[in-house]
Image 1 (cartoon, rainbow, N blue to C red):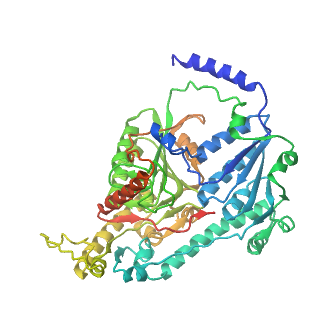
Image 2: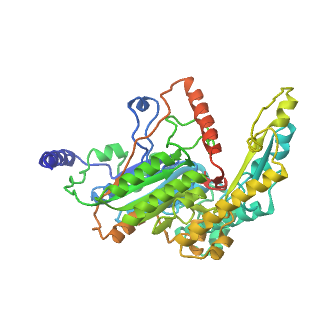
Image 3: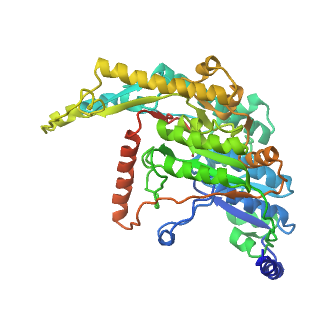
Length: 557
């Protein structure tokens, strides 16, 4: 409070300085990689030298809002590259573009070529511009599954998993020789839903009916010689020609920000909306993330980790904070340990008993990611969020035959009739399989009951939409698993309303201590990645059962 006058004077002086000169008429943003929904957590000082901070959707939205307030800036150019982004993230970006256009700014998309993801985003803009020699590449959705069971068997490796139903297909790539009918059915309904979103976006953008939009998709690709004629693009123009086409100078955000007045410092010291996040694989232990991203994406064990020890402590902190009048819980997780998910749920229940909790789902919030969402009084998802997967599986990788092929002799001495239940030397016996299935069914029944109570349904109503089935956000809304389609802004607005706060009540992320991988650089970084992933396998195996969501179509390039 004492420092506020100094902050205000500094803002005033800074605003006068920034007002000297003019920002560029158009600001260009190059979108060349997947954007996280929220800013990365603060990094140790040493990490600033080995990796650059990623631009988040939230930060991009703040930049768009600043541009929308500045009457001197005419609009934005989105320079789009083929970056793998989930459909839900693209829908976040489309919402930002729509909001910026409503503020009176012109937004144009330009790309050397368009694949499905960038084209879907471009359809939210005023114009779609294509580089000479460029192309609108084949549009649509496809998903390829690789099934390793027969190949692994040649090396003496197998997978023995017990799943609550054939729709809980997380282990199918390891345990099955080919795609099962249930796997095929599930991927088909997900792709159909995503394809419907694309059709609607193209129909609205290109002023076509549904049939015309489907014809445009099925008629792709389009080279630069026919893209405008076929109504797939508005103009073919080189990037160097954009200033003359748009009628103004184009500059970067950094160039624009140096000439823009920032928001006045706030004196608000009252109640606020607390932002919590559960991102990555849910584990028993502490949250963590790789300080330097590996060159390839490694599912589950290479992902960020949401540990119950970290999340529970954070939930207790928020529950005790009387100034935190409401909570927005951001969930972006495929699931993980059932015991860690339950620990988080119980802690979040305490929070929900004291203040409203609104859940906002990211690209994926399934299985354990849905489990931890059940304390929410309101659940919001994007139309293409992958969610549901209310189900359980557990099992093991069997390597006994591999050691025999290698002529390695392994011998085990054990006390306790069932101590080797999860030994990798052999598959489950019939008796063991029966025991494990009982455990899976026990956890599944508890999962269904929790969902039924949270969503005000009966277990019999939940079971047909559970069984490990995955749904898009739009499908989940139809099945009463979520309450609204939207993103973080919708979640914050709902939290303010439920808590009776003003529309300008601040949103503040609450953080707890994070355990990070020790600093490594150069060749040692590979060992750090390996150690992190190896630890991930160990952590996941500690739980009595896993509630892990299938790897299903999500990212678009």
